Image (tube, rainbow, N blue to C red; front, side, top):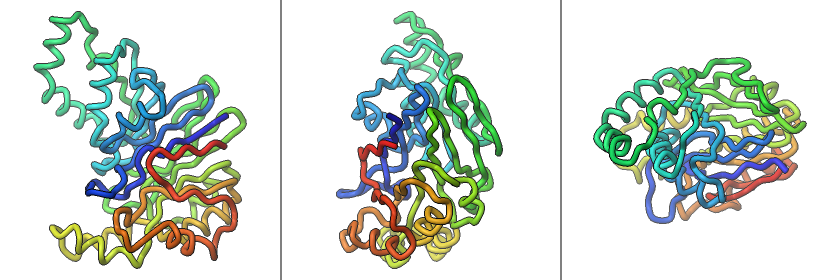
Amino acid sequence: MASVALLGVKGGPAIRPGSSMPTSHLLRLGGRTVLVDAGLGASQGVIRQGAGLHGLDLIVITHLHSDHYLELGPLLLTAWTAGLKRPMRVIGPKGLAAYFEGFWAAMDFDIELRIEDEGRPDIRDLVVLSEMHEGEVLDEDGLRLRAMRNVHPPIEDSFALRFEGEGKAVVFSGDTAPMAEMVEFAKGADLLVHEAMLLEGVDALCARVGNGDHRMKTHMLRSHTPAGEAGRIATQAGVGALALNHLIPNDDPDFTEAHWREAVAPHWSGPLHIGRDGMVIEF
């Protein structure tokens, strides 16, 4: 059975008492175990799903906002200390190479020490990085991955992902404003994992953050998808089920699961999962 575990469902990088963790997902499909995004808490999320960090087959990063790749380096270093000794493929947008250069430099003392003192292979040779591009990214060993640029200004290299295997398909919207192209991209998928925002919660969220100005609200409104629009896309694409993740807001007690369902109900009548950390969806 194919499945997606929502390891972290919070929109944005900040965590507070009562909030979920930022974005990451664990996909099991086509005989592979794939990490999609690596926000803060991703390592613990993977372990809680019973998957060893060094047992991951592939890591895919959708875009370079910190809530989607902050824990990528630490996760890989921890996988190495847990026994990683084979190449680990990482696919991500342009700029991810610079992240690794900085991370390896920051951890140079520990890496060199463990190579010399413990006889470990050089982790810097094990991480195999490929740059994300639109179209077919991967098609091998029963797993296919296609990518489409989404709408997440000001970032240009931000991608939606479609994985296929075992006769199943799952689509991750990534962080994006509503886009008509998502309908065709997600057409007939068994599961659509789409980001979602409650418009009525944006002002309170901006006030709670407190260290931005009017541009924070502008970013949210132009770069994310109202929950109802996610439902509309799911209906038009004819998907089997819809899961809302990257929830904005996530840690406001004034907004509950009922608010999300109410926002989606006029536009989607199929199976609906309101994301929470650790939720596993089989498809």
